Length: 389
Image (cartoon, rainbow, N blue to C red; front, side, top):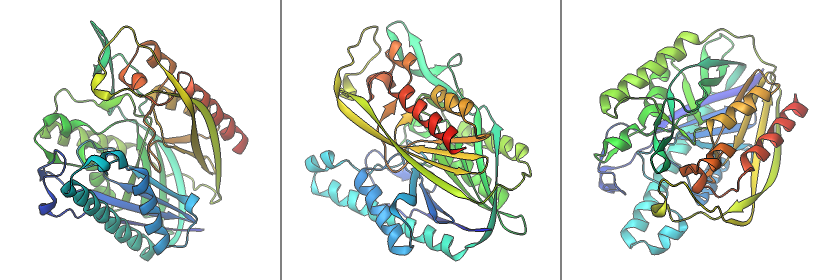
C-alpha cells in the first residue's frame, strides 16, 4: 500500500492587516490543506488566485519541509472571490509602501499556513488505499447570458453546466477516510455580490468545511472547468450561502459509496501545447457587444499534467476552461472517473470554447488564447489519456 497523509491549517490573517484591498472584516476563516500521496504533494488554499512568484515561494516552502520533486507539487485555489489577492508584479511597481508591505505580510501568512498543513500531513503519514467515483449535483448555473446588446455576465438557466463531481478518496487500512480530493465546475462568487467587504471562503470553502466536519477527514478542492459557471442561487445573501453549501454537502454525502480500491501505481505524464496568443484588452473597456475584433498576439504555451491511478485520471492545467470543454474531455476519456482541475500552479486567464467566441462572451474577449485553443488542448489531453490508459 502507498503512504498518504493529510493536514489542514487556518490562514491566520491578523486584524491589523485590514483593510486589505476592498476587505474590511472576516465573515469566516480561510484554510490551507495539504495531502501527501506517495511522492506527490497537493496544496489547496482558500484564495482567489496566486501569482507566479507566490507559486514559487510556496513550492520552495514545501521543498524545505519535504523531500519532493518540484514537478510533483500541485498548488490549487478554491477561487473564492472574497479573499485578498497576491498582487501582480506590475501592480506592485505602482503601489505605495503600505500596499507593498501588506502584500508581503499576506504572502508570509500563506506560507505559514502551508508549512503547518504540510507538517500535519507528514505527521499523519500511513498506509492507505485509494478509490474513486463520480457524483452528480446541480450546484451551479451558466453565467453567459444574452441581452439586447450581446452576451454578458448573469444567470442563464439554458446555458450548459456539467454537474459531474469527480472524487478521489484516500482511506486507512481500517477503511476510515483520511482525505478526499474533489472538483466542481463553479466559481465561488456569492459573498462578493453581497458587497459588504467580507473575507469569506464562500460557497466551496464552506461546503468543504462541512464535508470535513461530517466525515472527519481533510477535503481538498480543485477548481473544475468553471470559467462560465457560478453558484445557482436566486439571490446572493449569507442565508443563500449557508443553504446552497448545505445542499451540496447533503447530495455529496448521500451519493458517496464504498468503492473497490484502485491500483496504487501513480503515473505522471506532462505535455506542452503551443497555441496562438491573443491581446487582452483593458478589463474596464469590456461590455456586451455584437461585434469584436480578436487580435492575435504571438504564441502561448500551456503545460498539462496528467496523473493516472488505475481507473482515475487527473488532468491539471493553469487556464480556466468552460464547463462544456471539461465535459468533452470527460466523455472521451477512457478513465471512468476523470477530474479536470484548473488554476493549478498559477493561472492563465480564460481558455473558452468556440461558441464563446461566436457569442463574444466576457471570457472570450478577456482571454489570452486565440479561438480554437480550448479544442486543440482538449484533443491533446484526450490523446494522452487514451495512450496512458
